[in-house]
Image 1: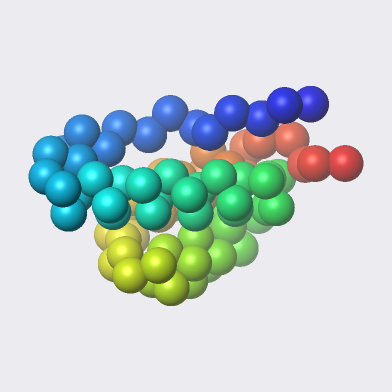
Image 2: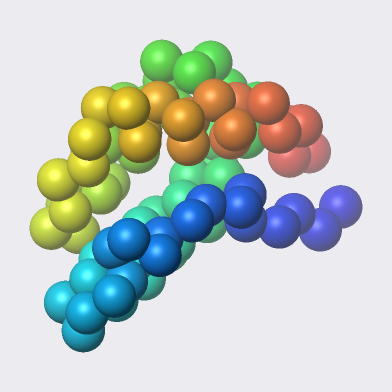
Length: 79
């Protein structure tokens, strides 16, 4: 089954060249985590998202990570 990246608005972030880089990093990490951890518990997805985003130089807010984690956790597990 083909998966699509959850709809996340990055308009506020991507209004500058620097912001565009951050938006691309977020999109990249969300796609990775979605493919490897879909259907996992929200706390686990949240921890992984935070770790990987910080590894990419992005310091995400707790609320933003929680929202993304909830979306990814609701996706069906890959088989």
